[in-house]
Length: 347
Image (tube, rainbow, N blue to C red; front, top):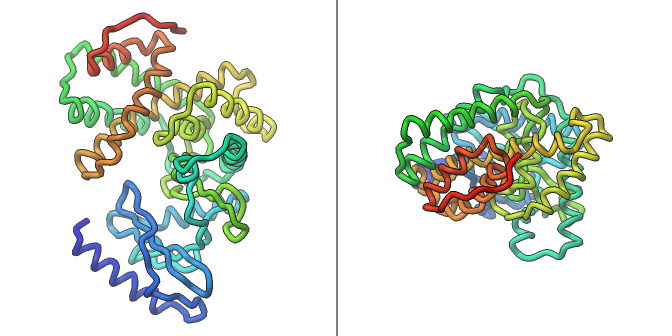
């Protein structure tokens, strides 16, 4: 989006807010940028009757506010802390929302947080995830095998071809496609629930004050789908922006699995089976993310995403190095990074 387009959008946004009912007490002069994301959406804060509200700017035809409004209601019905839609203009792509505060889980982690508070935050996040997976999923787009397979090609298109400027040989392409097919077959067979798709620290709000509601506040769920039950857990414990070592991943995965079983969610009764499910789902997600982050850097000039690629690559290696079926992927990564191939433990 060009600067002139942004300026035009901002003018329309200000006009819309100015014409809302006066009892809201909106001070348009207080409008200030809050954040933006990997899409065309951006967010502002505005003062209104001694509180702050959030304005979403989702410019058509690039964005559509309706999925956000729909999923907001689904998650609110499930008892989760999500923004409440105060006013909407779906044709122009504007929403006025309640504010869940200025601090994300990611902010708290970056600023430094003691172990006790960190564990408390993530126990609350795991509890919220179990609630989220009990929300209505009817009518949502399906995160099925064809879609999962299509997304994996982002790895080839942007990570291999653009980031590394690599053209696969026929045998390499065939071996990698077999890895993709194995992942998709396994992951698409998992039980289906509502999937946030980015349930991780930047989209979880730390609600440290009563006015913001209980922890965690949840954002950026407009792309929710009906899909594999382990997807959001993999997002959380293999966070693309925060490195969690494997013992911590396991601890949170066990805690989630125990809560999910008690809540009647369709997870395997044997944790070993569940562990494999969420690891393979994490591998699939992180391969896609390598492609997405490369695309955001090279196509969209969002250069900060490149800094997260080594972390995501390490998550990929963590899982792929454990299973013999993914040996072709490890060999490819070794070739990309000029690493001498070695034999590791596999299952």
